[in-house]
Length: 580
Image (cartoon, rainbow, N blue to C red; front, side):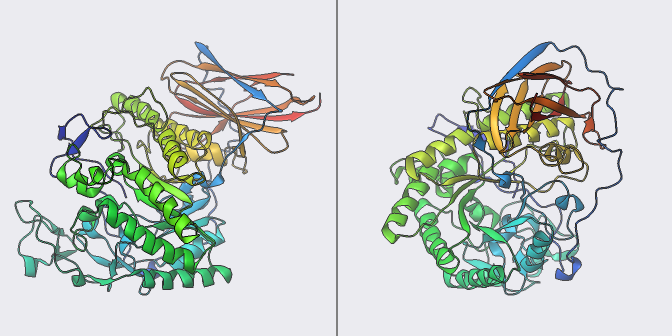
């Protein structure tokens, strides 16, 4: 669940991470309100219709003239060359629980994830969890997993389910860890429950952690196996579609997020021990779904343990004790060794979370400097020349780095981005950043990804998803094979096609705020197929009316197609190919 880190840093030249937040491990700053308190609050709903808006198919963007392009970007499509498969599971929602957001079932999302901080403490027997550091360390009764699965099944979305590996889950729906009556005055209390404190004294210093039994009961691998066995039976009865089990959530933050039950910093050895015990229990109870881990939170957690964070990343005692190998590489290597030893596959998906750490980026801020930084920070997903403009101050290039770790340590494991969000959800820069992310997820072959949380209805990011999943209001979408990618400093072209080769859809992104560019698609080896029809849809100016079809938006020739891309926009070019 999402986080920023303390801005003041103690920096030094170390191998991977550049800085350590003062005061130890970075902590989650996620929840601003409690989780839903009643399972009865939410009932399963049929698909919700799209609000009545100007029709994309009939509206015209002619009233918004496009400046003369100042540059051209070309993409070459060889019809005889195999495309790269795009997983439809990259269009997932990371968090949508409680009264369901109506856009969840019409934005084109393909999967919903049951996860986040509180899922580490979810007790399936009673439908409750503990909101921990995010909301006054309180147990809450919540919408149950059965309702969540029913919603997904009725709306044709698959499910990913986080299984607790922390070792403790909520014992009831009312307890909390730091009662003021017992621990004394605290810096903050729950406005609706004044006895529930935030676990900090008036001076802001953390209070000693109480016994875990204050709020929780033990959840050993055997209990988790019992729950997974029940989920397997439910799936086989057609009552859920759990396709992925995630081994807990952001373990490097347990000693802060869940310090009331796990005050000690997690190290390499404890992470692997829990992964083997709980992972094997899940696999034995339900062999069919994929298993994902370690669901780690961000840059320091990719390469260092929580023990290293407490000691200081320059000192990194836990990593040095394990051959100075980055934690992710060590995790994958040891899992592969475990699989060879047991003869059973443990891990299918290598799961990391990613959030921008530049100042103001992961927010709704929309000042020009933040907008520009937001778009530059997406380069941390892939660009070896981009040095992250934050306390990280290093080259992240996350997706190639994940590919390298997998290739070297556990070939065949897929990539998963369990949470991502580049901010600006209500701003045009957020739409461009989200579209760029979705394009890169396909380009780098990511198997599964989930946007945190769910885009606000009719927001810019909502329409970025629609550019890939339903750009014409009638189900037209980015296709399943990626056949070309082209980019320059401020322009992107992502081209997809269907298996027949008769439909091509390109998503075109323009980061420039004032200059249009010309997008050229050139075709070779198409065996007589030529562009026979073309449609162009634009998303500009953070418009709530969405993607608007442009009249006469493209020019086509037997071996090429062209459209102009407005400044600061996401544009979709659809081509129907046929005989001359």
